Every structure is written in C-alpha cells, then in structure tokens.
Amino acid sequence: MKTLFACVKRNTILFFKDKGLFFTSLITPLILLVLYSTFLSNVYKDSYTMIFESQGLSISKEIVDGLAGGQLMSSLLAVSCVTVSFCSNMLMVQDKVTGAHKDMLITPLKRSTLGLSYYISTTISTLIICLVALVACLIYVAIVGWYMTFIDVLLTFVDILLLVTFGTALSSVINYFLSSQGQISAVGSIVSSCYGFICGAYMPLSQLGEGLRNAFMFLPGTYGTALIRNHAMGGAIEELSKTASPEIIKALKDTIDCNIYFFDQSVDTSVMYVVVIASIVVLLGAYVLINKFAKKSKK
Image (cartoon, rainbow, N blue to C red; front, side, top):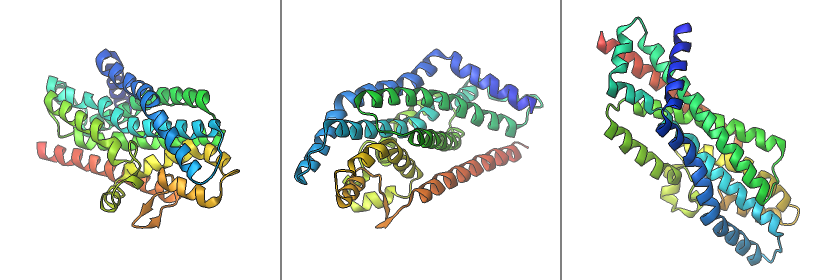
C-alpha cells in the first residue's frame, strides 16, 4: 500500500509540475466555456424561442436563459470529463518515452501496482480540473439564469465523478498501447475533435439520422451526457412546466436529449447509471487483464 501511495503521489506531482500539460488541461474547459457562451448561447436561445413561439407560448427571458445555460454547462462537462482524462493520462506514455517505466519495473515494484497508480493519479488530476470547470459553469449559470436545486448540483457532481472514472478507464486502456509523442498527439487530437459529437454533447442525437443515432446509443458516453443534461437543465425545465403542457415538455426533452431512446425504447435515468457503471467495470477489467497479460509475456 505504501508503494502504491508513493507511485500515485509521484505521478500526481509530475502532472502538476508539467506546466504545459497542466495548464493545457485546465484552460481547455475554461476556453470552451467562453467559446460556448459567446457563439452557441444565442443559437440555443433562438432555438428555444422559436419552439415556444411556434406553440403560442410566451416564456420569460430568464427561463430561456436558464435552459441555454444548462445545456451549455452539460455539453462542456460531458466532453471535458473524458478529454481531460486523456491529457492527464499522458504521463503513462511519457514514462515509456523517457524510459522511466522500465527503470521503475527493474525495482521490486509490481507491474500491477504501477498500472493502478497511473489510474488513480489520473482520476485525481482529472477530477480536480473538472471540479474547477464545474465551479466556473455554476458561476456562469448563476449569472445567466439559476434554476438548479442543491440535489441537481449534487447529482451533477456524481455524474462528473462517474464520467471521470469512465474517461480514465478508457484512456488507460488506449494509452497503454501508445509509446511515442506522435501517438499521444494523434490520439489526443482524435478524442478532442470527435468525442463531443459521438456522445451527443455538441449536437443532440435527436438531430441525427436514425441509423447514426441508434449506433451512438451503444456508446456509454451518450448516457453520461444525458445524465448531466437532465440534472443541469432539470430546474429550468421544471419551472417551464408550470407554463407549458406535458406534451411540449416531452417534445423539448426529446429534442435536447434529456430523453434518449434505444431503438425507440425510452431509457430511464436508472438505466443510464447502470450503463455507465457497467462500462467502467468492463474497461477496468480490460485494463487489469492487459497488465496481467503483459506481465506474463515479460516472464
């Protein structure tokens, strides 16, 4: 246990000492928040206004702002929890590049202990950065239109914790097979540019074709995005329900992916949690097996 703690401490300190890697990971969510609020906020607000006007509803600007703010917040956090974990987990690959990985394995340090230390330290680093992003998002939502309850905030934190765990497990499995700076850059670029689309953060799945939408429903990140969106926008939707009919509320939740469907079957919130947790277990199991198999191969 002392050895594991020492390795986790070493990995975490090295991540935060690498100013380039740390500030890139930290600033990226904040930059996205600025870009989202600058360019996407008005798009979301106009969309909501058009929907309500088409139904003959007169909704206050505060509710529209609250809906847009919650959608921006959920999109940002859903993407950051996974993309930041790939940045935080680059130390695993950097140790291979510098030879530090082999040097540590020459000692009595077990390969499984080293692998677990990378996972734990990456989770810690990513969670710290995502919590900073959460605070920034909550401040933004409080400015534009606050409707979240304490339970909403608490559940959003739980969602972030699950997605960070999922992102770390996914990055651990993928990064294990990388061994050069070029591969790190390539994977980082692919994840950063593609993940937001395939998880429904940048564009709701309801706007996609049926085939593509059904394919993305097999990806755990889709369910994580839906969880955060439900909790970030739940308060504003509840306030809207005092004015709008249940049919309009359902249509709105379908449009923004608060309601998601697996081949036309509605997916309950509890099922979303099961899918995300199960994917974490599967990925962690794969990571353990990979390390175990590599250990036997070395022998």
